Figure 1 (cartoon, rainbow over the protein chains, first blue to last red):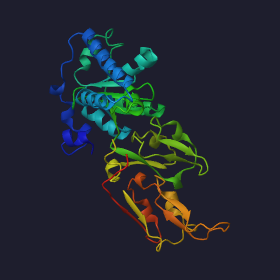
Figure 2: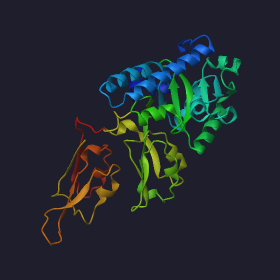
Figure 3: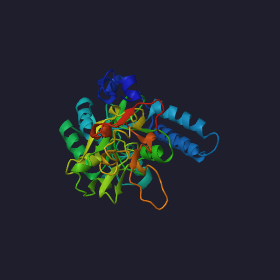
Figure 4: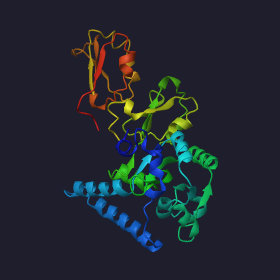
Length: 269
Length: 79
């Protein structure tokens, strides 16, 4: 149970609480697309200015201000594939859209960039203005959405959920380092924009055959190869519990367990 | 987490070494009991060297044949 489960979960995991997808929670965003772009630019500028101050005495003050802003408006959490499929059954409508991070960091063209998903009524506006919202959206049903997620899981992308005005969950992203600004800011700049999942990967060395498949899957620098033991080593403090190494392992040597089962990890988000 | 090893119950650090290999956080280390110059040490002991890294999975407690390891939750936790 993370702090969001305690605040917004009502006894469940917060992203499985149907109230967090309710239409009335959708806060009207700026009325014109230009104003929206300005808002995004303002956010990016604020973060950039803060990052410049790293190492200075004011840094901790900047950090807490920015995290406070992020936690009230826009933050994410890693969710493994199985739980993500449950979300597909709860939220509606489901609309596949282009990824803003990859567009701004790599300039990926729209055709290759349908890697994020918008949830809820906001997507009808996206559909209406395809030029403004970079390619528009493609509405899918639950089964197609699950297949789409499985495909991206095979390709090795981390599934995350994002709030748009806490606790309204309005987005599903499939992220990777370094293009995902959430992962980037969390790992490199110590700004907690992306929370770890409710699970953590547990490795069973006796089942491992040493194929090294899992090594290529981790986006969070939590797995390395232990040369003399001929097996991978999972650092459970760094593990975000995305489950990518679990779905890749052919021998079932890695599985996910509830983070709260481990006393030292249950406050590590 | 607070980890302690009761060496009077340990079945022999060099022979067993199960705790060294099962720990997912590599908390334990094996050291010679006494170090004498120019003499190979016969007795080794297990020390919870990197205790702050313990995640509390209890794997070592369950696998130890002599039931020598105790893991308690402490208030100070590693980051």
